[in-house]
Image: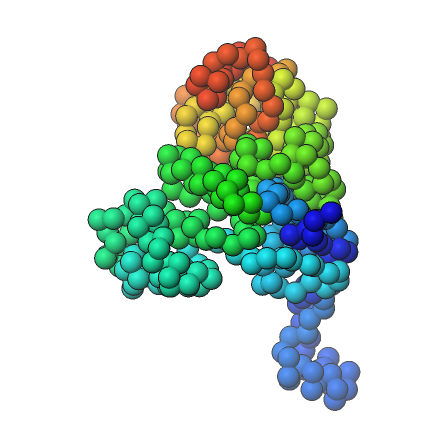
Length: 410
């Protein structure tokens, strides 16, 4: 058996979380003696602490030339794992064996100086990322062509648009040539056309020269496209290590906790009328959902709070592609709401979208006047449906069946 590119055994990372303790008066401190006074004079307000394990007992190995995906909810430990593998932070427990030169692409644009030109920043950023001057010179023309910033090469990057900035930063990082490349959610840069270009470049990196790639992303279709094997993390522990299709299916079927979506705070006007107070995206049986397979049922539950009687109330749910193309909008029937809390349920018997990343947009209106509109959540669709021929042609597919909408007072 060949020597693995990365071997991780019993890996754990513990953090100490400080909490401000109860404030005390000088009289209270005097009553507890001179030692307490000294501690308070030295450290100020007292603190308590707790231990938090970002990673716990993680074991896996990566073979040379393998493209390994890492998925999980926010806070699952993905970025912590990559920082440990990149030697940015030290593990608390366990050991890591790495064979080969490692380059990390954890944040696009780190090391760029706004006062320097694009040309100067290519050399500066390349050096920070571990490239020699000779390597940068040999790849300079390729980097500039990839970033599409030839006209502005000798302009300070502080005058670049945000899109130009991230294109140049990604172009430098994407032309690294290490044995092991660690990538953390950096393909969501630029416009849709440039994102496709980035994915193509990462495919070339992964398939060429037998390089090993570790890739973290919430974009599950990209994980499916790039990775042969995937790790599924949850609350710092490794739930599954296996083929990408198996990991995505496990993530789609119940690995997401049933927690309410974080919503934007309502304005004063919305509080005085009606607003969304809670939102859940779920499987039809109630488990939380962030990734759904084509053909399976799913639903969205909205809880709205009315401060006064609302006439001709309508709540809409829209499905939008990552490029902003609206595919479906479902409106609840116009109804009068009494003051208090109400629940709306949008149920679809079968997902009829092509595999991709989508946004769910919610909007409320009263008598035809918009009250609230916001992006409620993101939804990843996996799998294929041969009954949707337009999916391959259009890239998205059509919603062939509408959602059922019900409204009830709580």
